Image (cartoon, rainbow over all chains, first blue to last red; front, top):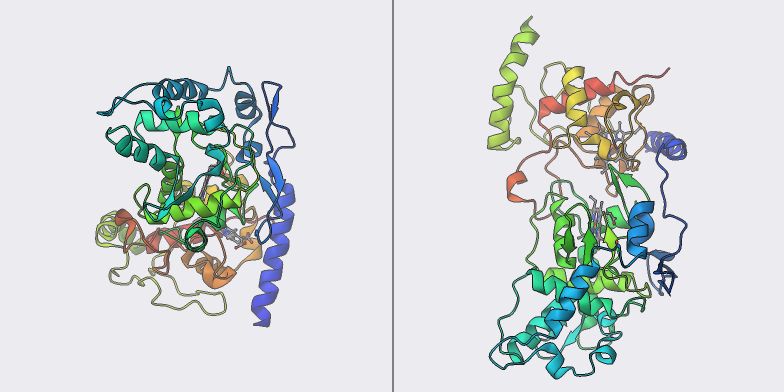
Length: 287
Length: 159
């Protein structure tokens, strides 16, 4: 036992030395996100009670100067094209009932303000939490008599992006008092700390224990969701939250659950809570 | 000479191991987790065949194999871009650790650093849940790849 401890002490000493001599500059960039020199986004906030971290930091702080600048300028942000496309869809009639989203939600501007910042929320009919994508599908089926979108259909991503963007800068807030939200939060927390795959990693291993460090070319953030759907430069496309979750799970060499499954919805509830108070950035720009 | 001959036979053996899951021990190869790591040490070679440091250097850097640079910087591989900073810099690793300790670290880092470590175990079946089909029942590295990496790490000396 003593032997083990002394070896570990040496190891830790080595780790401390090497961290300070690492060539790459770790940690979040000291910068402010102000979109079009007008809208300041809260990208660093104090953590709510019972949170494992002291400060919640948006993934924006972990990106390069160029990527951060792209997000700060809405003319340059490639995600803004999806916002425009989403607005078109919002106003376009579809389905047997002959309705568009706007036909039911007449005063779109005030209706949508803040809405995107409050999902996922409890759905009493489904008796489970739903996210914006599922709310859109619910409206399409029940009110428009249109087919639900398939996961990650271009229109689903554009409309979700448009809806979230109407809450730009507003704090992310999930209401855990509704329905059974707390047990979904519990389930999400459990999943967040469960190690998966051949590489044997949990969300927490990367995003709680090592945020601020480079893992190969990737600068690990806290894995917050306030920017979703996000525009990913690597893929030149909008990426939905459940797609991102699945990518991270796949990277542990594990099989990933289907989009909107109980597991991914529970994770969405929990991970959204982990970023409580951060301003909505949709469409965020990420590598 | 006889070592050279054995090594020639390895590609076939490795290909076989990859298909059949690396846990199937070929003659002379120790199956994953069948020899316990005691006191953070694994003195016994997994294959009885001396590791090849040149092959080990490649496996170390290969993103589909060791991918060790994901987390560790290593000056000897400065020709490769993007060294991670999650783990300690490996320059001088052989000055800090014995061969038996390095083997234990690669085989199952959890037995050396504790359950909470981020470093994967490269020759163990004690892994996370829901392993993807392509990887199920297999170790990340073959026994000989571990020996090669250990031989390579033994060349990382500064003193």
